[in-house]
Length: 203
Image (cartoon, rainbow, N blue to C red; front, side):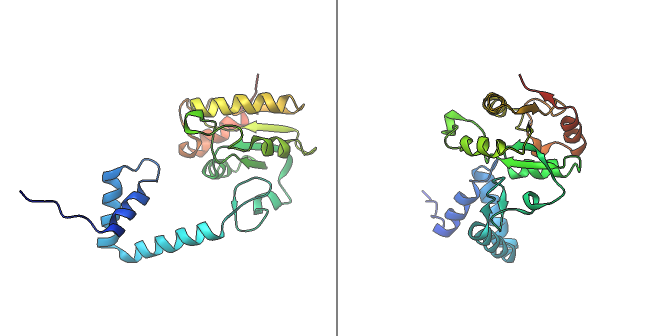
């Protein structure tokens, strides 16, 4: 009987690290690892360096919670943004998708997640008190809820909508031009722009 030779630990560690990426299973992670090490070791080295530098140097913006290298990001510091509008999104990828429409000129708050009790993500873990404090700075007049149209995204929008309306803010939700069950990151810019323009008050 032929025994299977154990794989080197660094290779196993790389496969396990790649499995942390969304949508990447064991076989895909192994294929990625072999490709990088076998066909493009320089790319593997560049990837390792970029990840290390990003993890070491990126901060969360003090105002929007997005990624930045300085305490307050360039978007929050931009003097031509509409300070009265605050768009709440789940991820920085969603923020980038909305920015790509060139249709929204307000500011953002990035939750870095969505309510998912089964995954241990609640209002405390997402620091919703910080979101509410940001929205009630006395300048913001309208909060646009642009969480995804998934079950978790809808729950998050409902929770925040109730909390923010109780503070006297106008709260709107992006329109259903974004298909139910979809994630903003993967929706085309035209659809996102329409969803923003056709946003509606939350109930």
